[in-house]
Image (cartoon, rainbow, N blue to C red; front, side):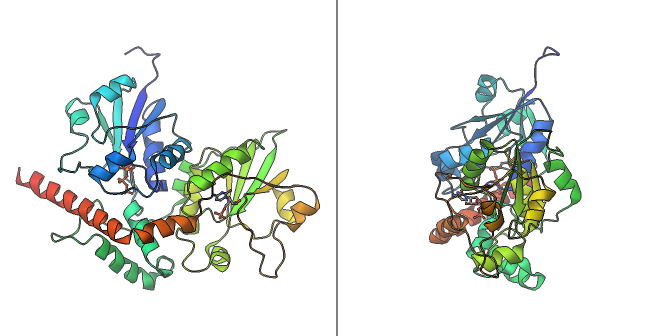
Length: 358
Ligand code: CTP
Ligand code: C5P
């Protein structure tokens, strides 16, 4: 291989309900080479091998492309990684987390690339998985906010991944422990440059989804530097109610930081956008999507100040998806998702038993 040829890295997956665990895998994969090519499975492949995806393939392709370490997305990637696809894409090797991925008949989807010596592993992020997030959504409580109620959540998760043989070490749950190191790894560490137009947007950005991505892509057309102000959990709970937010402030911070359009995150932003806040960050324009804006605690409009100085703009993301819609999709398909999770864990346990016998 010529010294000048960039190393092209292949990573693939379902990337359903894209969370910061996926983003962290892609971050590590990108660091192993120069160009990161991500293969995303289509709905049919996922349905066949794993069960129904929460998001459609078109939504999942857009989500993956918005992750800042991704250079190219390949649609309709086969569930079992093929050497031919790596060759077609000019990729040197494939990267996957240190868990196992099995097809419907229980074989390792990375066997072919492993046998060819074109497989590298990155570290799976502990304490976050689609299974765990689905568990939270199926709970109509604030369980994930209190240690006491964590037990209740664990019970739901145990039910979700009920298996006659016990618990898989892959799907098994541990708590996510946010560290400053993770924030450093995820953030750009960039300052606005002189002359940059600075935009400020605020919100919950809970279960960071394709609606948020479509919104931020449009915001990026208006500005050079985008600051996202994330409301604290108690504030989100005040205006969204029920068990929102599904993800806590630290988790939401990482999800938002992984988005290519985001330059900086305010970890716990005041609900109303004040003159002081705008001055502090040199904000030129404050934007909000077409979704409803809840009043502040005293009944006032949180965007009254930027509106009064002509620095507020509404952006239409042309996407109606909300966090609540995702929760609805999950709850409507409760049985299917419980079965899917149980099936995933059983496959993993069977595989472990088989490899231990050998
Ligand atoms: N991944 C990770 N950390 C997690 C979850 C996923 O590093 N907490 C990695 C996987 O190892 C894989 C990539 O993300 O390399 C894409 O995985 P995908 O097949 O989409 O996800 P699952 O492993 O099925 O994710 P989940 O357990 O969340 O369903
Ligand atoms: O609801 P949340 O606080 O997460 O929204 C954050 C921002 O994303 C808001 O400005 C909202 O209007 C915008 N958004 C959007 N289109 C969606 C979902 C959210 O423009 N489908």
